[in-house]
Length: 195
Image (cartoon, rainbow, N blue to C red; front, side, top):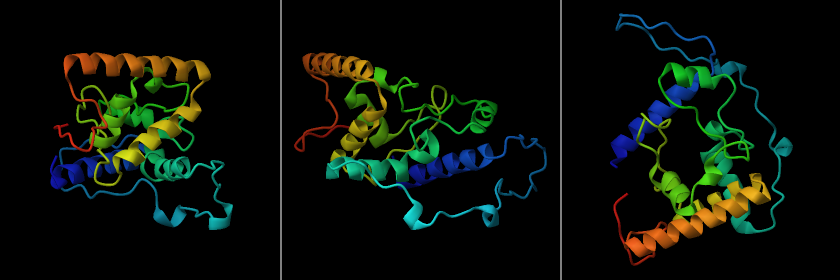
């Protein structure tokens, strides 16, 4: 995917998030002269002191980095505790014809997917707006190791039963892909494959 296409998707996601902040839908007009406005006035944003920000409880530096990465790259769409899209946003998402951004916690369904699939979604994004809310890929911002650490971090929100089920799904997926001779992400450093 070209940098231009990635930038275009990012702008679409940002525009969708900004529009979702206002629960009142903006009427569609025939006028091409409409001046865009922000749903939230930047002057109304309250900033939190750095001392008041939560600190990580992880001792493992890999998980501490993953937690920080989640807050920077994932939380604004998937929720700061993995709870999913903001309360006011689903109506806007539906109005635009998209499915809701899924939660990453135990109330969601991403624990049904194998690790390599979760890795691919984070790395390459979701470019099928008929099935999911569009998501940019983070391959330019995050290494493969940091993406896998994000997958491991998200699992802390799941129940033990969900983690056990997901581990079985992952093992089945890897076995099936191996038997088919298909690539499995993350790829070995010597392998290459198109997304």
